[in-house]
Length: 448
Image (cartoon, rainbow, N blue to C red; front, side, top):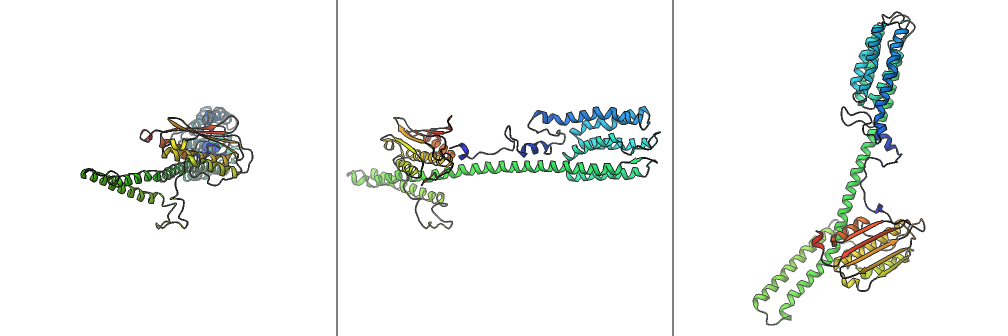
């Protein structure tokens, strides 16, 4: 038996040590705010720092390389080489938080550099309009854009890149190696791949959030269903007491002859109020049991049984254990004498249901496990204890009359109803323990 009987909402964040694709897509999903850094919501610190480290390495590597190539290979002036090197590489640091602004700055710097190189002394025989360092920095920028911006923005960036290359082609110097088409193809490929990865991350995040909402709603529905089931069962207990009050009030004048008229009228009013309350409870029961004993049109189900059957109690735990044993589950029962007589109706019913749910969970999750059921009582409370060992086989069996509720959720609601306490948890040997303390006094008012 395990806690999987209890509905638990799922959270979008993966558990520690999880290597599932969800961990990867959490890193890649689009930042929620405009200036939020890439990977800002990654689960580990090194993942959040990774974009800054990569951008810093690129700037430190490309800046001196750009200046050296422009000075030595293209024979551009030292001042122009330094200015262009800084303008084409330093904005990469901005790409971590604002890649679109960084792209605008770098594109302008690269375009100005292409114009300047048309007048360089040794541009012939070299790449133009985009130098190798420009291409490397521009592709790194495309990765940042693809992980951040929308598809429409990425298409616009790609088309502008190609358009600038076409315009510069009209001013192409003689003898150069044209790189406009190369950058156009490579930038489109990088944008497509990173945009697809970002889309997968966003989609996985939306799925995880929807699962979390659905699981929370399922847990809420489970709790409401269990409370409605408990209310249906307790109706029979309360209805019995109301019927007794009605009979006693109606029969009082006959059992106590010579009763004054005002007293007779008082008993008649008590009986009328009890009958009215009983009628209201029956109408409420019709609503609560509509999905079990009645059809959707208000008619009874064909068998007409189950909903109006007497509610079980501690006295029927012996039969429950015998049915479980017949289904192949070894169960040892220790039932204190007089526990049923000592327990009020709500505690009597709750004790039975707790044992029933606990045994059903043992059968489902630990088939063949040695199980001990103990029900004892003293002057103040009833103690229900169900302990099982580890599963003895893999095949699961279902006993007749297995659990009617939702496992630990139902147990907690029943214990809460009586003002008691519930202690559940795994054991070191692989088994499970359920211990419930149900007060014998009227604890419902305190619990409410």
